Image (cartoon, rainbow, N blue to C red; front, side, top):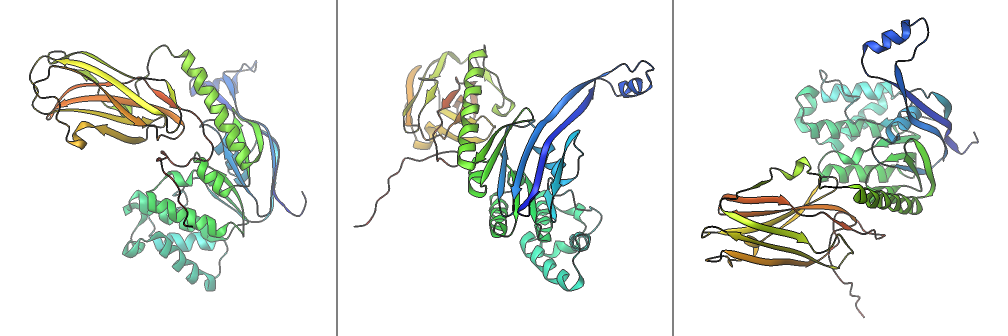
Length: 396
C-alpha cells in the first residue's frame, strides 16, 4: 500500500451461514458425519478497491447487495471470510447515528466519553464540546439522560459526536436518510466542510448526494463489484441497469401489486358503478403531456363531489396530489354520468409511479382504487422528485 492510499481492500468476500431453525446450528456442530444443515449466503464476492488520500468513494446499489457489509468490514466491525483490508490513520464510521450513545448518560456525558475514547486531551475537550453542542441544538436537554431525547435529538447528537473526531477516513452509511430537512442540510454542510481534509466512503440511495460529494463510484450487485469509475459514469450505469430491471419486471407482472402505503381500497357499488380510469400511456418523458381518463355513473344526486389523484413513487414517497376541490370545480351537480380527463405536462423525475383515484362526496368516500402505474424515462442531470417546467433569462 503506497503512501497516498488510505484504504486498500483486496478480494473481500463475506459468506453467512443461514439456518432454517436455531437448533440446526447445534445439530451441525455435533454431527459426527459433518452433515451440513445450513445454506451459504454470499453477501460479498471478491470486492477490491483503493481509496486515495483526499478522495471520496460512493458505493451504490439496491438494499441487500452488500453495501453495509462492506462498510462494516472496512471499519473493523466484521471480519471478512476471505481477503483483507489495509487502512491508514483514524477511521470514523457512522453506520448507525445513535449506536455510540449510552441512554443512561446525559448528552454532555456522552460527548465527553466519546471524545476521551478518541484521544482528546482536556484542552481540546472544551472546544469540541462547544462545537458539538452548537451542532446538535439540544439546549438545556444536554444535561438530561439521552433516553429522554426524541429521535431527532439523538440523531443530531450522534452525528455531531461522530464527525468531531477529525478522522483520516470518514465512513457514512445512509446518514442523510434520517432526520428532517434541516438536519439533512446541516449534515451536508458539515460533510462539505470536512471534504478537503479527509477521505470518505459514502453509501446513499440519493444519486444527487453521491454526485455532489464523490469522485468515484462503485456499484454493488448481489455482492459483486459490477462497476468502478467516475461518479457521473457510475450513476448513469446504475440508473440504466435499474431501468432494465424495471422493464423486465414489468413484463413478468401479471397483476398490479397493492402496496401498503396506498391505504384502504374500496368501492361502494350501491352508489357508484361502471368506474373506469387509466393513464393514456405506460411511460412518459419529462414535459410530455400526461392524460388520466376517467368515467363513472352515480346512482344518486351528489352534494359535493370531489375527484382526487394522489401519486407516490416506487419508494413509497408521497409526491403530490391532484383534486378538483383545489380549483373549486363544481361540475357534478345534477350529473349522474361523468366522463373526463386530467391533463398536465409531466414534471415527475425518472422513476416508477403509482396513483390512486379517489371519488368523494362531502366526507363520504365512494371509490378508491389504484390506477395503472406509469414510468418516467431516465434523463441525466435531474434532481429531487420533480422538475418544474421553466426557462432561464439573461439580462443583456
